[in-house]
Amino acid sequence: MEPIIINVYKQMDGYTFSLPVSIRQRVKDWFPDAHPANRIFVAYDIKSDFEKYYDQLENYIYPALLGIRSDNNLDDKVKEIQFVDSETGNLLHTHRLAA
Image (cartoon, rainbow, N blue to C red; front, side):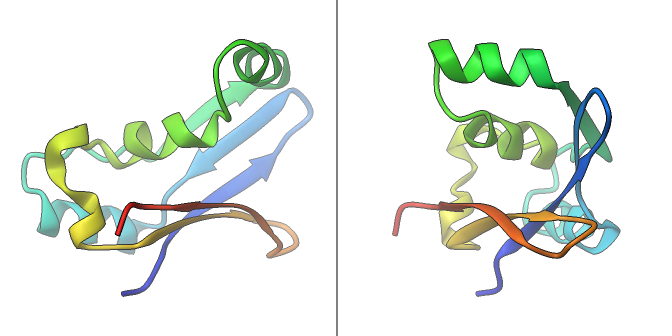
């Protein structure tokens, strides 16, 4: 199973998380009721505050970006979500789904 790649664009005022068209289509094929988003922007201060009080933001970004509910059993389709810096291609964060 190939991982789902989420592109991360660092901007002057925050991060934009986005999905390639092929991933959005794959998610729609897997889960016809899903509503994948093109992109989600999060300001640096929001990310920092969120992670201070809750958890790593990426754990919440991928379900919102994929447009899936928690009971969709994504782990039946893919085992890993990778957040990749769009400029450098460096892996920024990996989220492993339950096996």
